[in-house]
Image 1 (cartoon, rainbow, N blue to C red):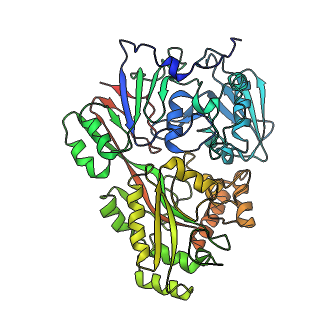
Image 2 (image 1 turned 135 degrees about the horizontal axis):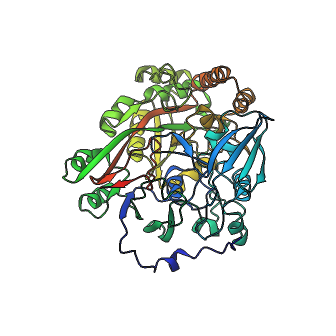
Image 3 (image 1 turned 120 degrees about the vertical axis):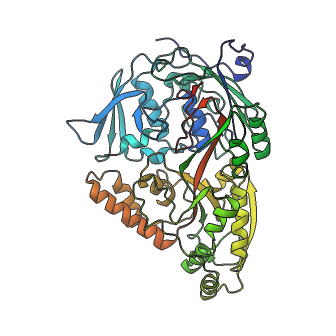
Length: 526
């Protein structure tokens, strides 16, 4: 086997000359990747960036369909229904020239299951992983799991020897502020190699000449230059001036301007993501309110009052300029389990909301801090500003604290907030994903993004059982029961489903993915 050597630093690689015949695509979006460690942060822009360089056993194509990646096929074992068998693609090389094989898969899945992994919920049912040949792997689950393949779309395959050689076997503790070799360097099997990187400034990727998929995908783009541009006006100006070719998030106020410019187009699609507010309903007291010795959010009447104080249609019309779909449940319509009944919107009723606040003993209201990102979702801070005014009308004085997502998300995962805005996409297209991360009691294997402090052993039991329910009708019935409980509890306050608007030069042929995930090996250039 070729020795797996340390990946050269981005600073050294950055001096390499740009190929004269490179078909360069200059890409900009609001958000930078938070870390390069493949298992440290389950966050949309970070995962999107990694997908250009690293690969998974099974992937979603631009339409959202599951297709073979580093696994060519997969099936349940004929001898044991608790075993999934994966045949691996042969002849695949990592970017440093080393060979991809079954030992890398075993290592990667075990790593992704570890406590610091932000993907562990996806693998909670996995009890063992074993290599049964250089290109064959068996994944054993605690009981038959019919949807395990759906959970592998974002489990990146890492080079075992590279990780060992660079002291990065353990997943980076991203929330704890740890920096590791894997958080700054990357060695994948994907279509593009990292050439140079200056985080938050500029990253250059170049085509992997030895990529196994060179004959399977268009591969028109041979170089990607990525620039994170947080400011909306600056990002749009860069597209209008020709400084960049593709921006992933056209501000809603600029859609007409971009689409009306010769040589530019805006491509739009509903996103597999919902925006909502979470609230700490489980603690006996809150750290960020002005009520001593009590938790207003623990009273369902207060949660109900806040839910019906939100004027979702006003947010759609004024804040989002029509580019959103009001939501009554924290589940996008793409997801198994979604129904029109669950998604029915609560009527906005300020009089009823004030009456509920009075019944709960908060006629004079209370004050609370709302934590909000200002660089992650479409108009995220503006949405928070809008709900601040709505909550004020029922006596809740909100102190808005808007932070970059790199500071905001750890507040949620480390329980450093009582009231927060969050968006959630569902790459598995199944409710179990939402339950595992956002509903199950927070613990070692589940609930890493559940900052509501909600926990119910019976609900937890039902959630865990979903992974092993082979009777699909019975499984869907159980999903419906769990959703009924969530809706009854008013565990979260849904706001809307996002709409995606990608802006690009008219010669760039990119399909808008419902997961907001461009995959540049599919992009064609006229």
